Image 1 (cartoon, rainbow, N blue to C red):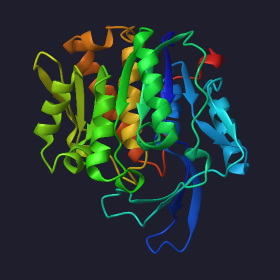
Image 2 (cartoon, helix red, strand yellow):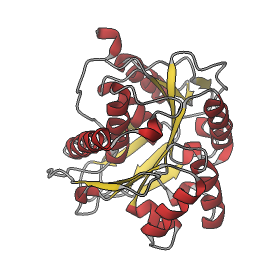
Image 3 (tube, rainbow, N blue to C red):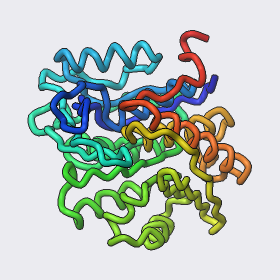
Length: 313
């Protein structure tokens, strides 16, 4: 079990997932990039805390109960009387890729979570998706990133671009780059990078390097992922074959497994993450690809449990 605590910031959403190709029925599943990543980190055996506004409605209570059952600490989570946000998922494409439509206005996601008093027991801050990029929660996440970096935590950012939940492209790019510039590690998919930089993934990686992000991860589904260092060194981790049910939460699971491996190696905090060696980078990529593939083999984000929750050990 890792003693290096990770604080996750990002949205919790109720995913309405179609039960068949005609979308004549939907299943209500707990999701959202922040929630998914915190859940997956806990299942990797990492000590994890979660920072977000959670509704006091029935869905919000389900979020709290699930996180507490998984051993996720909620001292940084706030309560909101507003309803939980929704993500309605369109019928899946043949490759299992999900398309999202969001209902966010007037929900708990429109509110900023309370700022933590301190970072006791934490080595790393991970922020993810539009919940850490735009609106009141995005502004709070940016302020928290600055505080955490000054306090000696390492920082990572998963872009997890959802255009329908972001401002126009130029504004979204500016907000994303402001956060990238604070990070030790930035992660994006080829779709994320393509949307931001007109299909030029190499330009995206170069831009993030110039902004000062020493580690850059670019994922490409079944084709694996590329990890780049500040020195210009790079490696590619091969994807794992999987029977794809859907890709919901696969990127979040990938990120969690990568950070989880770094946490177990004691590589989080201060300047340690940016200085990981190639052996640890290779191990983390291998873990992340395998974990994401297993997540794709089930409906929704329900990653495998690699280790028991920390409170059970």
